[in-house]
Amino acid sequence: MGSLTYDRVVVEFEDRMLAHLQLVIVQKLRHGESFLLSWRDATVVGDGRSAAWLHPAIPLYFKFAGGHAPTINPNWVAQLTRAANSCQGLVVTAEEGAVVNANQAPRVEPAIGIRAAAQTHTTKATVSER
Image 1: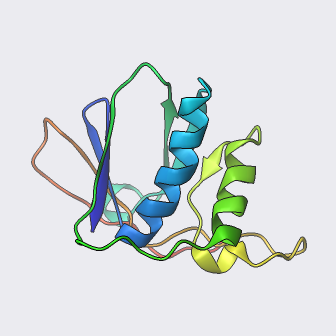
Image 2: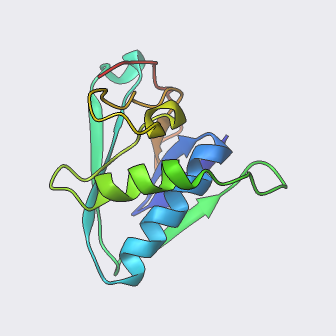
Image 3: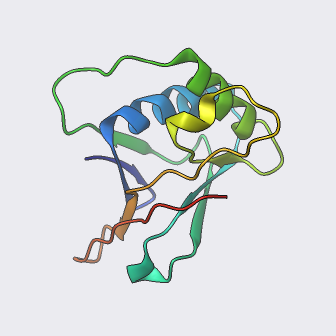
């Protein structure tokens, strides 16, 4: 399980998902664009959604647990990029949602945890369908 640290908040993602998010996030920030990143929370933290407004001026740190870079799925990157460019922002979705089907909503990614850097507890996310 890797993590994304942004403004003292640590959000945990599977390494494969984090690698795809990193490509999309870095591309947006490199162009000086701010945008919303949101994900589904675990039942432990209220089974809701969390979101962060990402801005190029705030440091961002990606930490991968594994030693090997995962294979990148260009369709998934394209789906995440379209989401990041929308008014809804970058909603973290599972890879299965990358299949091009205009009638099917992407599935919200499971197993996402979040913790504040100043706190000591960690939570997990749940599997959910939109």
